[in-house]
Length: 234
Image (cartoon, rainbow, N blue to C red; front, top):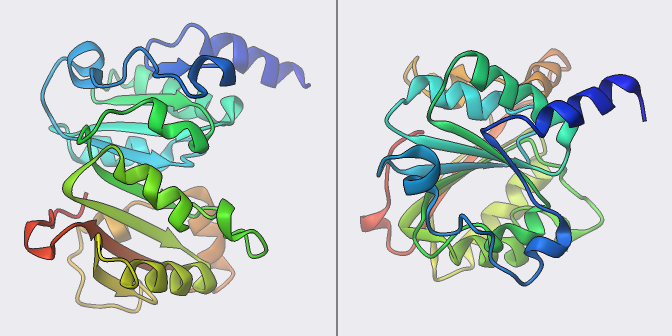
């Protein structure tokens, strides 16, 4: 392990906005903050939005800058990557940002029913040969339903047309989810408002994909009846 990575891991231990739990602590067990993130971390009743597989937390931090009345939590298993997002949020004294270091397979241990209002999944590994590892597979969607509020929205932004089409098919086949939007190329869609976070917030990987000429796709779908779905973009 490189010295820089070791330094980041040590610094992570000092960050007040980064929460880490070992596999044993949360496997088939509830994390102590489950059901009380608003009260004990953010000190308010604002909606909670997750970014799953957040990497360096670029999207988490950017969305939090845009919406100070929303609480954002980035989730990833890579501590060296999370270090960047957590450090930036602390440097900017952002009180509506937190991060969790854990495997997303264990996400149910961290949140209580209806505790989360939205999820962003930005440029996940499309897992072309392992459907069950896709973050939009039925296996994972069922996990999210355990803590999403009625009408909660899930956003998927990806350069993988295969993952886009797969997720669309999965959602359309479910009775407990409703497809709200499917855009095969967000930058070809001139109907989007200029301040739409789908366009204005870009990760490092997204910029790389755009330089390679890859179209960026977007899906938005909700839990339950579409009449109750939250339509906010972020």
